[in-house]
Image (cartoon, rainbow, N blue to C red; front, top):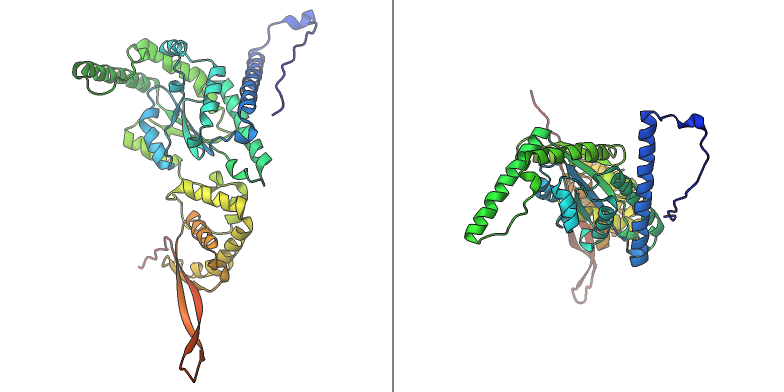
Length: 417
């Protein structure tokens, strides 16, 4: 990233230009100032990280799910479900928890927001932890226009690092980033009601804790006990965070989730939004390599995260072998599968020496899994007589190796009249 150097200029202003600017001009200038602020903030944080760790150690998560929503929208309630849906095992990064200083707490208790510089610095440093390399949910970021611009700059840098280290041994650490913006939406009445209900539940819990001494004390938020503060908190979200999140609709994968209903209903809405799509997650080179294999059905891959990691590693580290495996599937296996499209089961016997390589066999199974099939390979050794010794009666055999590949998928149902 080129260094950020703000430049100050002084220009004489003619009297005719002193008229009040139009509202649109003011908004445009305000937006330009916010972008410049973001560049200054992000540039300062990024340079500090480069100086402290070095560029080759700036390894951010492959998958970022940026979870936003009004107070009471159910971000905490639904985080566990989202983690399971995406096969993520690390805990979410909750920005409000990172901002635990007394000064920050006073601002939050009044329904306000902490400064952008502190938020960006804390978030970027936290995301560099090794446990988040495969993916993480980021709850509560971005919340302002400046933070939105900083997010864009971060993703630009992630792409730049990927290009910089492509073709090197470090390339596998800088994979194609996948960015999801997920917004849980509730209206003001629902938000306020849920905030106040949460306050009642926390107060009852803490009172029982004081009486029995069992359990852990829960945080009490001033906004959860005062309807005016609860409404102010919702309006701060609508005036700042909502517009900031909406501006990302055209930039990243955007998911708008109606969170008004019951938990089970909201979970189904989330699941529908986060169905696995290889076009979003695989490195483009890997996807181009695999796209000739037709997709059997909408895929929700078991152990999706591990599968994506392995396939990208094949492309980065064993591209030639992966190409041979894909060609083998396309030329020798797919014609047989197409003839068994009704039954959904195809059996293929092959003596191709390619499958003698255990890595090639693993690639074949993973490629079929990515395309929506289930493949199993058995190796059968068959002894074939070649020579017979008349003197001793000994029979010499050669071993014929046959790989039996079974491919299952959802077949076609034919209705009979």
